[in-house]
Length: 231
Image (cartoon, rainbow, N blue to C red):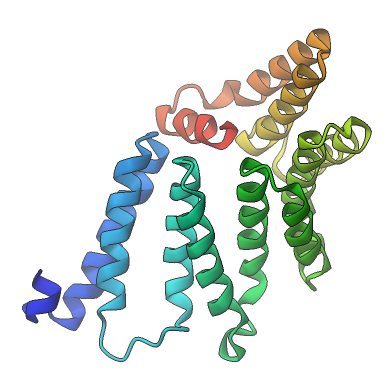
């Protein structure tokens, strides 16, 4: 590759890593997860090739986190957890103490992966780590949604609805009614009612979710992003 042959300058690696990472994000929002993963891995190769790049450089954490997210969408649990763990290692490095509130999102993503892998006990472990973080309260709108989904996965519906509806309220307060994140929470409430066998309430919350998205339908990228968030 050009990276190995030394034909790419330090400035080139920065430009190329950013360009490929942006391509990865673009394809993710378009719903093409394999291409998103492909381009983000190339971006990671370029950013890692920069001279004097330390393994704990905070910039690497976001690449690991993105690769983990895309791998999870492809049900690749092994690579999801590998890259999430790498991101966590970077955020926990002493030199990154001021930036490590971003670890909360990674903890949340770890929990989602464990729910998908039918390992809810580990999901609760990472969610509790996130909630106990000094900045955890600012992310309750996100963490409660995942907590509710974790309880739904073990069919503890009382706790599931408590956390999912709390998340929906927090998201409405934070983002407003017409927002994909608010729609996402209402979708999860509906999905949980459907799993419980309550079709009437499931339909109600699916309709609320669509109402939350109605202002976004003119922008196809927002629709793709919203759909990806629901999967």
